Image 1: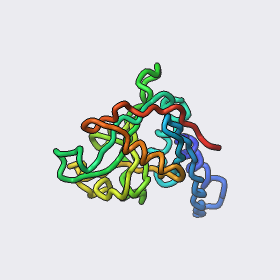
Image 2: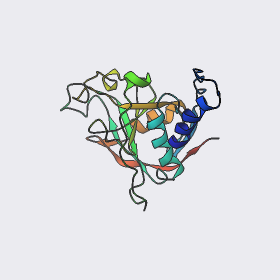
Image 3: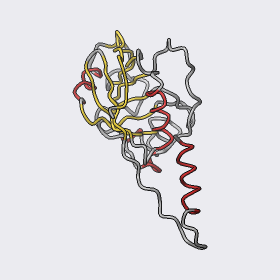
Length: 201
């Protein structure tokens, strides 16, 4: 997907022919709708391939490859289960099927919210990470607005924030139900199984 964008960017000026002519910027790509089916119900995401192209392409690569089928929502974070953190958040986190034979894709560069403008508001979907360029397949969904996850926020001490790349468009009640499912510490007990994840169109 990224290769196609690069080719477009290179060829567009050549098609104009005249010296000194500047190509018009490529049209914005339409968001991609993704359906996430879980054992607690389904919800729908809008993946912003225009404003967060690297992160979106990475997520869609896992979707198209079937990596999330058989995965889990395994982590829920509430005000009362993060005693070691002075900055509290509320999210639910999912990951790929650990038993899938194919390996995860390489980690991706962090697309900061200061660059994309996609903030960690209620229903935002974003990539989990440790260091700034370490995100692979694990993603989380915000429950309520979480500005400490944006660039400059200090939930991660490096202040770089996390790479948000879309939002929940339908079924937020399912996401909230997963967030409220039984848990110990921050682990859902049991994990909520992801049945299938696929593009809607």
